Length: 255
Image (cartoon, rainbow, N blue to C red; front, side):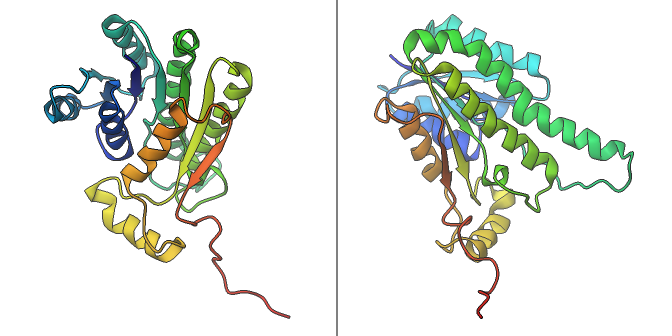
């Protein structure tokens, strides 16, 4: 039976993705930094149906890349294989900008963004490669449309997601044809109650669809790319943004 690790799977896109893979018959490894939330998602998957494969919960804080080693170790200890790695763990950091040439707060937030959104993911992925190669598996990175151009969310988040997308593209060239690697780039998505109002407003104003995305919509794309169906797709950046990137943001200029 196939095994998937979904990092950052205790809320939003990650939780929806974990549930979808469980529904499709995968053993799911649920990860997060809060043990109560990890247990909640694991119990939710278990209670769905007696035929749902057994999930595994692993508590790991991506603030320190070494902490992610336990995710792969526990997975192999329990299931002895890995078929899919979904790199979803990440954090949206508050907007920052350099107020002077030497701003320690600005640099600290930038480093935290790079550690959580990039460094820990790279460490886990590289360690997982031999096991994914053995199963002809696949990798899906959850990046962001903020990786494609400057955003008012701030340079720390944009830089981390841009680097994550490039990591996925480069890895695809290195690992093909044994392992397929793809990136999904969500636009405004309602992932939790805290950001719901902000995301709904952004979606209504800025997306062609006039609404924000739903976590399950992103999860469906992740599952498709990770499955065996799109064997001809690797190294791609799949934008899922309701037309955010192509919607005109200014009045047309006429002559």
